[in-house]
Every structure is written in structure tokens, then in C-alpha cells.
Image 1 (cartoon, rainbow, N blue to C red):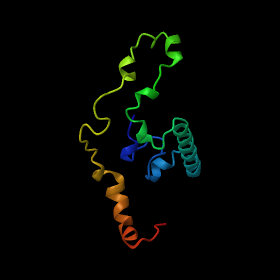
Image 2: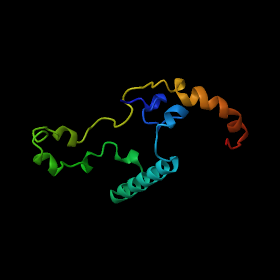
Image 3: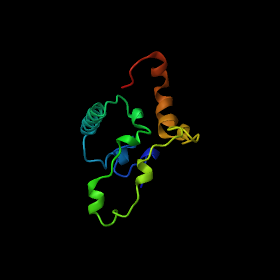
Image 4: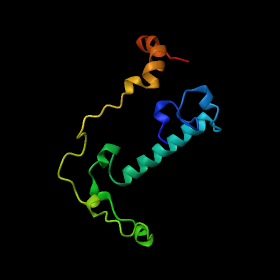
Length: 126
């Protein structure tokens, strides 16, 4: 169920709706800490690959390899992933213009109007 981006996150993690937020048993700062740890680990992985940005991974099929666990798993052992491991000669990004209708999302329809004066004046919204 992918509905978090519609402000209807069923567990209350990705929502500003108070009723849905009450369903989330964790603390907001725990989520923030978790995201910081993920970001740090990602930076470390990128550094170990000699890269600086996630965008630098796009098209780098030379960094992919078959997992040895694939061979041991009978359900996936017969899946041919060789075409995923081959370099692609075309462009790596933005082949098709996409419209996700973000202007109709919760952020722009609710939060932006409330915070617009603060943004214009450079003040913090608390």
C-alpha cells in the first residue's frame, strides 16, 4: 500500500494528519536519528566506492555483481539478470517527462499557504 505521499500513511510516519500521527508509536526524534544514520551509512558506502553523490551511481553497472545467495535460492536461481549487469549506451536520466501532480499534494495545498509569509520575510515558523 503506497499512500504515504498522499498524507494518508496508515501507520502515521509520513503524515501531518493528527489522527494518523497518533497511530505512530515511535517518537519523531527517533525517526530523525534513524534517517541521519541511514545518510551517514550511505555516505560511507559512496566513499568506499570512490563516489560523492547518489547521482554518481546512475548507470554504473560496473558496480553491480550477482549475489551468491541467488544461486542458493531455488526460487530465483533461474532468473537471468545479465542484462541488468551490462552497460547501457543511452542516457542514464530523465527519458520521459513525469508529472506527479505535486501541486495538489498536502505540502502545497496546506503547509505552503500557512508558511508563505514566514518564507517571504525569512522568519522561522514554529
